Amino acid sequence: MAANDQEVIFNDKLDKEIRIEPKDWMPDNYRKTLIRQISQHAHSEIIGMQPEGIWITKAPTLKRKATLLAKVQDEAGHGLYLYAAAETMGISREEMNMQLITGKAKYSSIFNYPTLTWADMGTIGWLVDGAAIMNQVPLCRTSFGPYARAMVRVCKEESFHQRQGFEILLTLCRGSKEQKQMAQDSLNRWWWPSLMMFGPNDDNSPHSAQSMKWKIKRFSNDELRQKFVDICVEQAKILGLTIPDPDLKWNEEKQHYDFGTINWEEFNQVISGNGPCNKERMQVRKTAHEEGQWVREAALAYAKKQQERNKKAA
Ligand code: FAQ
Image 1 (tube, protein in one colour):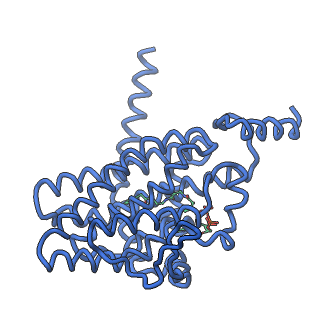
Image 2: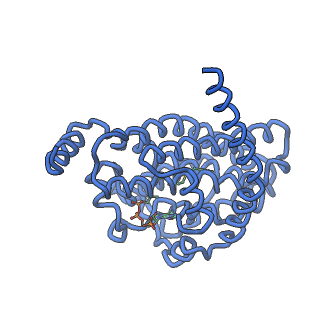
């Protein structure tokens, strides 16, 4: 079939909301864009285990420990579904991993901030998982089948994560004065980085226009950020916490909250490797990769042995 005909079929599928599947023809840049986005998303889930992982041993009760442990394990699972979805596009797990540990591939800016207190476990669940849900529910309708299907389960789990985070904060906010202050301090530190998770403003987002045309993205970065702010303001009221933005104000005409200007210089620094914890995050990942070498070798040796046994038996 001529390339032109293939493109007509591809576009027709997009128009009719028929998912693009791995064996279907697709434009090279559609493939590249998805490999970039899905693998960055996978890396974010894997690196995202670090800021919470260090709190598993410090959780205040057994119940909190078990819940946090389950949450962090879920993030590992999300990383694995996403790597598997990206692999269907012809890139290997090894290559993606190398892109991460050599610093070639990005991961979400949010995971380059430190977790200083137990309240941060609440705030991450509330805001970071909350932002992830806002961004990923529309991805359940993204045009590439394996990515969309992976997102369905991920979103269900993220929803549990968001609620457990909110509940941690609610407990702290109903506790002592010091506990409430700890929650407020945590919100003060995580609010602006959470807004940065949605990416640059639309007029500064090089990939958005094409990704919207291809129905990879269903809403723009600014649209999702606005929805997130509107929801969080109401949730902060329930907690009795103050969002650290003096410009936050209800806009009757727009029926949305106006909010202050994001520090894009800080965002650019963080995504260029100069955030507060970028180096530490990468070092931990590299060490884990090196220390896992024997496991990969053992798994390969075992698979080879099994293959030989199966061959002999056949
Ligand atoms: N951080 O043109 P756009 C989670 C980069 S999962 C770092 O707007 P696009 C779960 C972008 O890659 C969180 N880099 O790009 C969890 C591009 O760079 P490139 C991750 C960012 O792709 C919770 C450049 O800027 N979620 O939290 C960021 O159309 C708790 C230009 O940007 C996803 O990955 C950023 N915040 O839109 C885990 C969701 N924003 O590649 C553990 C899927 C932008 O040209 C604990 N991804 N960049 O070098 C997406 O929806 C999109 O990729 C966006 C960016 C919206 C992130």
